[in-house]
Image 1 (cartoon, one colour):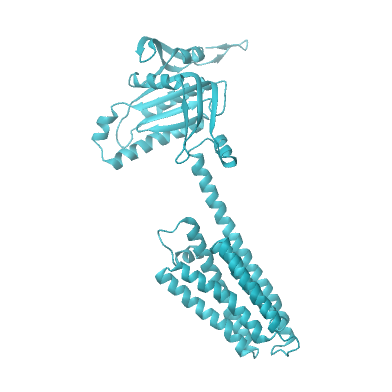
Image 2: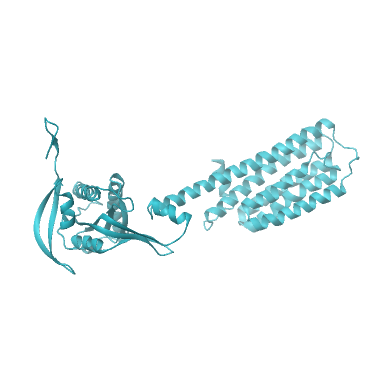
Length: 407
């Protein structure tokens, strides 16, 4: 809840995830260090070091005012630069006022939050610049300190502040890096999930390791196309948002079945849904798995309405060798090519409503395990007359008394 509230300070709808994360971390650092500085200042003042106590008190007031201005005007560049400068300079001033590293309990260690924070909330080049300035101030502190100067603080207070300064900086740096890494891991996980929604995991892993052209030959695979019957008429009777929601609802059902049978969804083209079995993971039962998938598709569509409408599909299947690969460098896609793909598309486009139409190649593979009805032959563009079958159901297998399977 607190993180959400902090994230709202200076937030802008135009911010990308990285900038939004940087803002949240910087505001968190500023508010945390302002709170600590107020406590530090109170202790210094109570111990009799009024000048030294005024510096962290002033830092706390300036930081809170600057954060309020950032929340109102959202000038992130100005806010970041001024806060990093305050974090860098004020601990250095306290070191000078108190006279030495020892008398100040190494308070300059708080200045390390500037270059370390810049790595997270800015970029590595800016962080190098801030680091160089810190090193210059550190050197100046060494030259300006008076090692033998008496301290306005008691030895007990000095030791207390040593532990508070070192522990406080460590806690803030640890929390900053912990939150940064956690959010970055979440961003990476989301990116991974988006990539896996586009590409098979095997292809995704290859591209992440070595961006290159990917093309593979698969000698045995089965391809399926499914298309809504009379989709054009349906589209004309619906608003654009209704149409997209209807297709989304249908394709979500199909996506579930793809996962169930461990298939690979290739793409949707308008109202057409394309799936392959045996690519990129080769499997001996590629045609059987895809036939079961097709029967479940039919059952899914027949059993329910989508946005109050009954739909029917044509489904076409074919089996054979294919080439699979990734094309493009922007908005790339994993796709299939080959005569087997073209023939599967023809089976769908020349099929009948509420049928699963298959070629002779697929029939030869599944005929012993599925009930298929011969439908004669049709003329297929580029291939002439071809025999076709309709898949009706999967055959029921019963175990006999002697252990043999009876269909």
